[in-house]
Image (cartoon, rainbow, N blue to C red):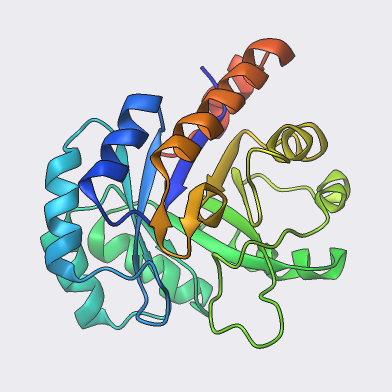
Length: 230
């Protein structure tokens, strides 16, 4: 077992292939029109079919309507839903029940006080994705290439598996793993050549760096098994 790696915001078959070949565990398709990584349903469905069962697929939405979720689940056939908006615990519970899919609930973190919002989602969300709060002026709830203070995680306790996100790249991923002790990570802008454009070489290098870290640090296999999605 190893650190679980999700590469998010894919838009081409080339990028999907790079993720699969390098050994990513999960890939993310984004459905949010303000994002440079936004996909149409048709493109996402084609990429999902192209990936097949070789990698887990996550559909990322922001306050999506029932109609939008219906279409995404029917056409893209994701393995997981990621909710990156203001979805309430009741909404998360209803979405899980309706689509019979595990849910990743994203939260924006800046200070230790921000962890309080997670409490009401315990036992409901299957995974907490922790991202940095968007910088002033940004319309994007994620994918901004900024990090929060990973040291804050030392005092954060939860029974829900955690996925670390926000500003991760090859230059800081080892420090991020050391400090956060995360068993699951999510990267998007950190493997791009420009906003929305994935760089296959960066994808390969990032994943290789994480796998090397796993080997050198003696990754806790039992913990990874306990924390894995699904």
